Length: 212
Image (cartoon, rainbow, N blue to C red; front, top):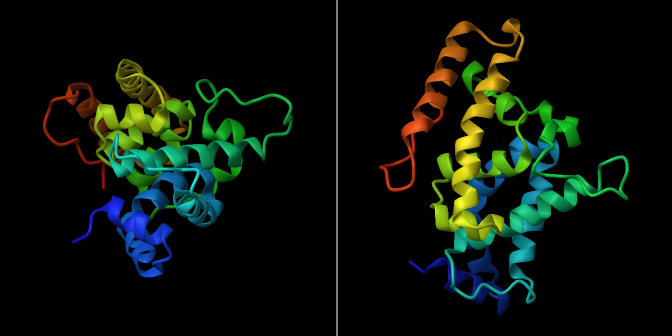
């Protein structure tokens, strides 16, 4: 089976079949990345991300994993999308302070079948976007610390700090939600998942699964 770099180069050379294989291989992960941050616009942002991958200016040189390269592009696409929707476009959003819901309330329209999944996403949407991305890419997509550093363009130490800070902020976000927003069982599952994050640091075994 061809690796991602080979498929990308073949796609850039005009082989559409290779492009389709590459997209199929990573589509669900990229869609998951955007669904919690852009609501109904997620599909469009996924398409933009893969098209950017094929542009000559975005060269994948193999100095990081392809997924780190791909999510780095996704991050840029997301920031462009949010900037285009803030009221005052003269002021650049502070993604280290503002949450998805601060900058894009439409993202809250996302729905999940299970209450615990819904509650987890609602909590994630209330933490700063930079921290939300780090948590999701580390625990859901299983990127390593080094891959996250490449994708999010920050030092590995910053990634570790964001993961630690994220656990605290998620707990606070959950506690500040009105009791009627989710059943007690969902809150219990989310609380357990957050607690598991405490001990899952770089060098441990596989990341814990989110509830549900």
